[in-house]
Image (cartoon, rainbow, N blue to C red; front, side):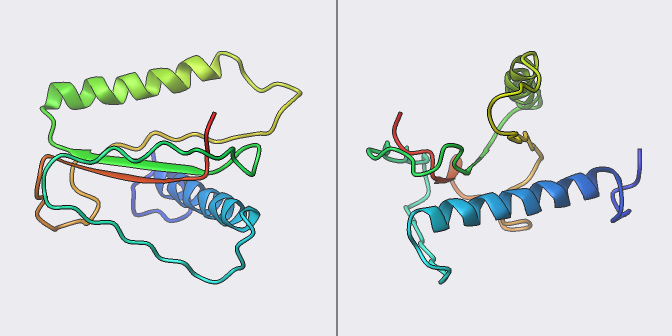
Length: 139
């Protein structure tokens, strides 16, 4: 295991690859909607409290394999944290049993979990924060 300060290996390299891959996928999804390369920024805010459930999409996805980012920040006991991480990892393990097939596109899924809020040292207000940026569309 390489220390987290090694930029050319270990988890630092894996995180950089995940970030680079997702950035390219997100840009591809955004441009597939017919948007030009201009920057678009959308902000959503509610008063502190429970995270609101995002509305369900109504349109079909434009791409066959659209990008999807979802992050949840909440307060958990150590036991609940470990259970949630194991449950999410189990989903990846179950998908991995299929292995790579000759048909379909190669896709990457990642489970990242850590203590702390996304804004770093900021004080976490409320019970949960749900971030969703997805091009999945309706089923």
